[in-house]
Length: 429
Ligand code: KE4
Image 1 (tube, protein in one colour):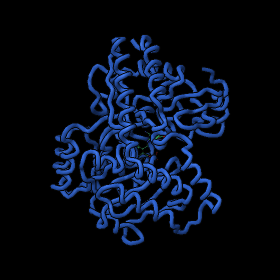
Image 2: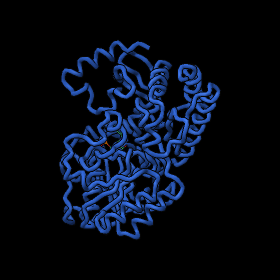
Image 3: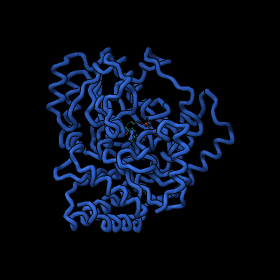
Image 4: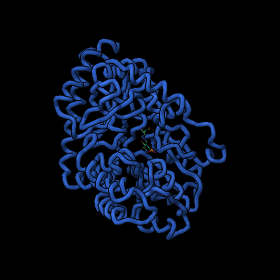
């Protein structure tokens, strides 16, 4: 694979954009080398600036669940753009996607659209604090809820990659109200709650973690969080920016049958355009301006083009729930194939998977939280990443990320991926 043009574009980008990227994880810092610049994408494939065709397992970090440039989504955006791109006034399409989302997701009566997952999570925490009158929040080491100050404490995803889980610029005044717990350790959460009686507004959790690699909730973990929240009048926020509309129509609440008080969304809900959202029952959402005292706003919130893309995506997912079964089967097939070839080469590894989210960890022990994710063999991961890239397979450029499969992937693509892994496996010892 030749990456000359990507490297040239990266050099030029660095003159005008910090680090040459608009989001740090794209810079390949965790795996080394220059990032790939994409020219276009269609279905399961990326076409980079050097004309290389890559099978895409990141899909823009989740949104492209139906594949890139999915025609109904593209058509909806083009049609909507011809009617104007933004008005700063209410439009009917916002109600259309809001009513559909409320119908698809359990335990929500109302939804507010924003422009990113960060905004959704930041707003959800402010709403929880306003509703309960309490200041402190519990988050989990390794979970990532966007780059709002309260969350950049032992955050996952790119924050780990850059060794700045506690970013400079976050004041002690803010950090003191964020309590850190170990993921999958309900006893630790119970301990923190007993040490902060009556002071905790919410627990925010990735109900299936995706920012330490993919980490499923341990048996009883989500149920335990629900019980602790009920007993202590704490709101449970499911950050479903990754899992919403991906793991099931109704997300993790449907998949595991656990009720959250507030749910946040991003990625899939926008069909690839900038959309985040947060939702809850009426009692909570009525605290939000202009109805209630908790302020939250956005010039481009509910943008017609973004709503058109999201609505087209959700309509298809709602009409064809068999997509979720197909995605599950494809991801299972990939899991089995990768595990087989890595075992054949005696490569110590563990593969975590929930639905169409999967991650490969070069670890001798199970990866169940941030600590166990962080002890995996990062050198082997770098070799794995670049080896797969050289074979035309694009996976997450960090061990603290998850792969997101799209329905556009064929079994031929999966077989090609498994075969590529087999060819590079000898380099992983
Ligand atoms: P955004 O602000 O990036 O739209 O969403 C923040 C966010 C919130 N919650 C969860 C569970 C998330 O995974 C994210 C963002 N995910 C990362 C990928 N790990 C986005 C990629 C990036 O930072 O460029």
